[in-house]
Length: 449
Image (tube, rainbow, N blue to C red; front, side):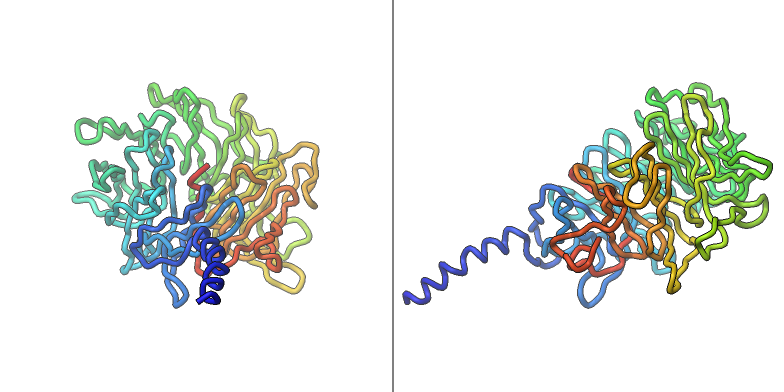
């Protein structure tokens, strides 16, 4: 009896330690991770070792607790966290006839998918209203009676019910202003954009088409919401020339425009994704010849034949202040600014190199610091890490000097003080890795910062 009691006392602290780190739980359990600072990662496949869903990671310590994924459809991918951080909106779909096209609303505190609904097709773009009450979803292939496919659904976040709909042919991407009073919609193969007024949906004409663009794909709004800075993709998207075009939102008239091009006799223009920091806009893309293919040659030192470009625009003067910064090619659609001034740029369908002397994929890291070398990257220099694959998720971790990157369906953790994979003491033999992360990951978001 005494031996049994002594053994119980000895094992009790270990048991409490295990429980405090989380434990495996069956699907549908109400147990939560108990973490204060979490990252959510979507895993798009089920296997013998785990199921598809949202993996939860301790974003302060780069550890995955032993807890079951949150179930959010068959092939979960893209996520958006609401402004109040109460929910995470997740889309599951793979573009096949078997796609579930499920939109799930995850309660972040409870770590459960509180509500879900089925969309009428795939989406690559949804935005949440600033008051966290609605999510607006672009569905370019949604059938519409009597006209070409394409709609924007309005989904109530408290019930996962569709409360409104507007019809815009081939509507693919959305940008929402700071107040939530206007949404700009961008359709495939179009030189117009749709100005959508959410308050008019269902009661008045909610959509105004504005022309004069060049394959627009995205917009940034001034703090007063009077001006939108529209990114024209140009030749890369089947148009003519990449540029930034001002749109005066008071009367939907066009303002100043600046071409996002290199200087010289044979300018190269590109822009499919952008990020704004203060009055500085970073624009990335792959230059295309009008009506042709990629046109930017790569510098010596790589087997890749074509490259992409990063340009820097001063929005206060509408001028290009730097251009010709060479990055990977491909279609750039992910960009984020990490700590220490490191800009992460991701693409898909880039040139993949995997030889004995070179490994190259779709990630580029640009050092924005004007006078500081970071690792091997000089001020204004670019690092292309030795990793293959498309980049589908980039998430700087606030309060830390690391960035989580999903590339080739795997998570890598970069230390932005050296622009290299982080040393993780919890997995010391695998730099940049986190233990027990088995799956095909698509997107990553922090939910507590």
